Amino acid sequence: MKLPPLLQRHWPLAALAGAVLLALLWGMLAPLRGDSHELLLEVRGGPDAPSTVRLTLGLEDVLLVRNATRAPLVFGPVQLAPGAEFRLPVEDTGEQAIPCPVLPGGVLRVRVVPMPDPGLERLRWRLDRFKHAIRTLPVMGPE
View (tube, one colour):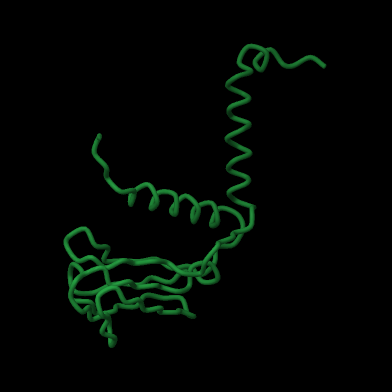
């Protein structure tokens, strides 16, 4: 079988384009899985604490709040001792504002989104999760 002249000349580029296309198709159609339904939020206080959290129904639908400060923490109607944990399960999509004076602005916004359908919506969800994982990597200096 003879390949077209364009593919004969640029076969590495065509192979790379095919691999990228396969990766995008996998991201669109592969089922979503998760080990745990909990999303950990360690409250340390300070300016680097998140003011918004995104949960996904069916995947990460429990917010696990851990008090990492040395003082008691007020999280909504609950007061957490230092080192204590609180699980907040969610069942409906939407956005909730939970008062927490230690966080910037004094409010934690919990945004709950439905599980994405296969296709572009699922690919966009995976890319957003990847972008968030890269953005929240810890900054470490050279040793």
